[in-house]
Amino acid sequence: MEKTKILIAYGTRYGATTSTAEEISKVLQGEGFEVRVVNLKEEKVKDISKFELVIIGSGMKMEMWTSKAKAFLNKFSGELKKKKVAIFVSSGARALMEYKGEHDEIIRITKKYLEDKASKYDLNPISMTMFGGIWDYNQIGKIYRKFLNAERENFIPAGIKETEPGVYDSRNWDEIRKWAKELAQMI
Ligand SMILES: Cc1cc2nc3c(=O)[nH]c(=O)nc-3n(C[C@H](O)[C@H](O)[C@H](O)COP(=O)(O)O)c2cc1C
Image 1 (cartoon, helix red, strand yellow):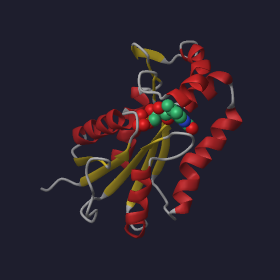
Image 2: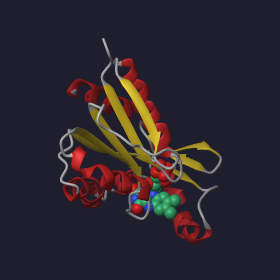
Image 3: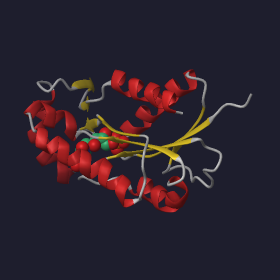
């Protein structure tokens, strides 16, 4: 019997969304699905008709999705309305907000990054979520560095691990795997 097909199409700037998408794919393949993972910067998606579920992922920067993930939503918005869709974003801000107890801010960004985006494209996703991300001080340009240096001292107290020199990763891999398993049960 043919396996049910899932597409994970994502946009990334600093690379976190790539490894998050790959982990989601690994779990879904383990659950018996055929998964195609597409980095939208490297590959164009021409046709989504054969996919039972389309998962769209984007990294966040200055509260904005990547242009490639937005372009994907624009291109396929008509078809996506009729499909099972799930959305995730990679957010470096969430863990810092949790650490600082900024609960209203978390509610605000959840609405802005996820709910407003789904509404804009008239989508009714089966699930939407916000994962952590990476802060890579080796990749951060001069303009942002000054501002982000002020945050750097908060990472370790916030429980964000330095996974390589200058790279702080706020992702919770169990949370990512759990979400993927839940999606598998919804289709
Ligand atoms: C200049 C800059 C701006 C950022 N702005 C935001 C933001 O507005 N909200 C947020 O949640 N994370 C923000 N982040 C953290 C990113 O979400 C994090 O780096 C994440 O890994 C991005 O996904 P990507 O690695 O797939 O590009 C920012 C990071 C940088 C370097």
